[in-house]
Length: 362
Image (cartoon, rainbow, N blue to C red; front, side, top):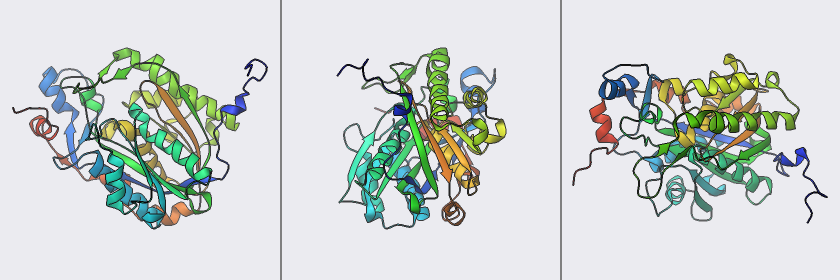
């Protein structure tokens, strides 16, 4: 086919399922342990210089992507109120799956009672693995191949000792039960994805910690993809920032999402409920998804939300979401995201080192 004789129209980039689809239930999970950023600075810089966040959540000795995904999934099911056997897909997005060869998704599906008559898979795309799974779930349900699908974004901290990531790479995430719009507390009105080969962050096989391109991660990576995705989706939907009650962005630190919001025309008051990075750190695959749970906790019927994820490598998924009347009756059926944030036990760098297995004993 000659592409010049059949050019793509801009409208062709909008992703919208044939059947209306929405969020039937959602759930968050954040571990209770907290490492203050000042502890990282004390160990590596003698306390000199500033810290990008207040503290970060750290998984305990008995926690990993699978256990945390199960907790978040149960919260999503509690809000959704459906029999888990109605779920036809369980997808877990992460860049810190506990097994190199063995899916996390099958264990999660078994634990919540969704197995065995389902499709299950693990997703990877750095920090947007969870929103990739969400896009696929929208398509699966929207094509009537499934009544319900469960998409999860969850991670544990992987920062190299002394690296800038050690301040912000935290643990936690969110789960979303995707289903028919008439049973949803929020409806997907449209979505858009934007990806390029921009290697700002990577981890090769057998390497323990990821590497990153320092300042390269800003303009050509995060901002290029986040702003383009948000701007393009708003163009496709015929909206501007003023048409949205809330906006949620990927949160690798405090400054990046605030600046992205400003570029797109949003005010700080529109992003506050979902801006978690200053309090508990970035949680990789669950970052924007976790921010969306906090926003849904605060949302009211009729609120409109723009959510834009970001994953290194690189790409962004943008979603236009409309909150329905069902949010009022369902958001209190599981713990609020800020309840998990308030539940905290402070640890020092030594305990953090033990919990994250940074000391290897042969």
